[in-house]
Length: 133
Length: 139
Image (tube, rainbow over all chains, first blue to last red; front, side):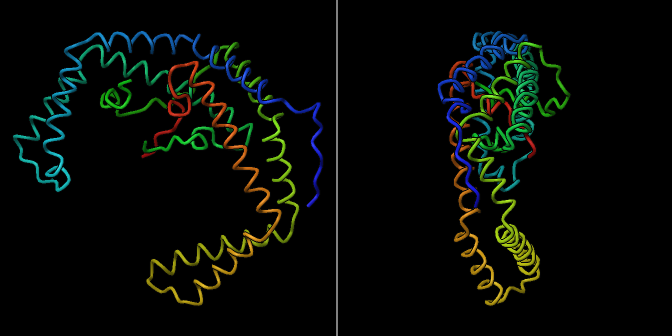
């Protein structure tokens, strides 16, 4: 194998790379998408009714976990589960948060895609974000 | 952060191409240039070039890929023999003993480790995991 010594002068030190990473994070945090996401998150956190609706849905879902796995949920329970889910997802704060998150996700995917293409490694997958996580 | 919870409301992820602001594009490009100039990525690129120019390494990887594909077909047909398994193990051992392939694998792992550190730096400042936000949901 041909081994070419790396010229130290041409190498970006980890400190310099980390500084570039922070600059990138600052630029991302300054985008309208990120600001909208933060704002939507704050609004969602303030929405007590949304939190209660989510909690009710999660509790019902948990109580039905075994029968859900067996696909043996009664029509009544299924309808109740759907009603609880709808109660949560139709909250304006939840919808605003979901929309803001989708916008931010699209932006992050675009930038991470640029990085992945340039460095020859899938950024998200390399950093441990599985598609099903 | 109620990311997962709110995803109940987003069944269809946005797939549109986003136009990046000049500031963000420049910051991303600067990060890319610095990553490419880091020791971890320079070593990774060198190891990749070295492996690709090594005939033995390329041949072994092609053979391994062919054997693995053949074995998958045979597994589906419930037709795997002890000889198939031994042949695959032998090639796997040869791959693991090939210096060019192992240098590449090692350098790739180091590049991935460095990328994770960089992601941590970004995520710490953002207050959210950048890689998790950037993942493509395909399932």
